[in-house]
Image 1 (tube, helix red, strand yellow):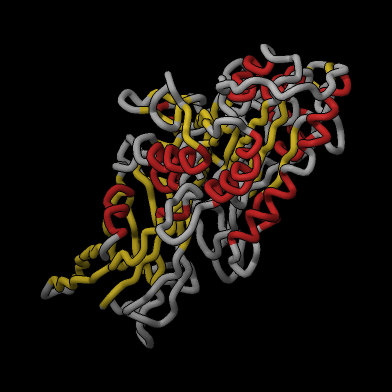
Image 2 (image 1 turned 135 degrees about the vertical axis):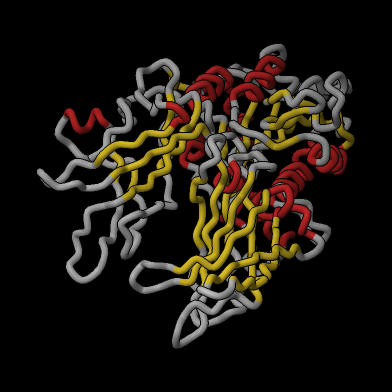
Length: 497
């Protein structure tokens, strides 16, 4: 078992960053009688080895019939700045070690490469086809497949994706596949991506057909037209060298896999959630002017990461005229900022809480709407913020969009167990979480989807409002004079999706 670092994942603090480990092996000991080995790798924490236990961080895929595997599946580890962790301090973040197994036998070499992951959370849908590929099989055509690699600073390449095999054809069309952008290029759009083409053989001795290079930025230009890559292969005989030009056509680039994609035909999930909840709540606001803030983006011109910025680009006056104004500011902001993680909830909760703490006489009640698509990266701080806010005249609505797991948001909801932080429990339940996907009409009726969502997320607001007023002995009084809201009523999560 190869030891990669000293870290206990079960007791660690909040990670500072994430590290990806890529694994390959060379010259493995052949353990099969009539074919080559079918290798796979496990990764276990070093501390578990000391305790004589064997939980695993993960396991690679099994690769049939090879003694030199390049594993596509990666290990993602949390790196904690304040803790001791031996994470590949070697030159180029590359570690090469002999494998120990059978005494007196050379078992091969394991190579591990570490790379700090960017916060890019975009995904892309890609599809390729080939035309007039080389014939590699004696009794048939070829069985081609593609292997994708991203370049490293030392000139080497790390495998990041492998397509399916298309049997017996020289004109293959591979299935479209969705892949995280950071797997392709770790968020660097100009990083070189190499694509190798092979003819599959059952014995693992796949025949090389050709290769070409591209980049994420180059592929992204293909949204409006096909991009053609030409690959020239060489066949050597005693008398001649024959050249053969093969064509690879990049058929599909779907950036719209982002949850923020603005379709000309329908609202995205963020916009639907905002409209569904906002159009009801806005009737309880006197002037319909809503400050709208985003978080999780790099702002122009210097690329500063912000978790609290005005969607309309005016930090001195972030107010938007009605929900339509909020939507327009959201759409315009998508064109000017770069989506970027991590996802922090506590700054916006604290922002609203500061204003709510100044109005405790019952004349105002604040509702914070957070729309998010993924993991909360400041969970401990968010819990503390909610515990503090529970004594103030405010409620928090969280709508989860997309296919992610929402375990942290479910915990914040507090229906099963009241939220606590450092031994203090929230005075009352002020959070309502709803995953939007549970209320989407399967027939595509977006009006019905929004109606279902609004009914669910607003169901607890009246009781939360009354619980605050009753515990403080505040009774209904005469209508207050008109006022101008002084804090953002809605928050828009700009976490990449």
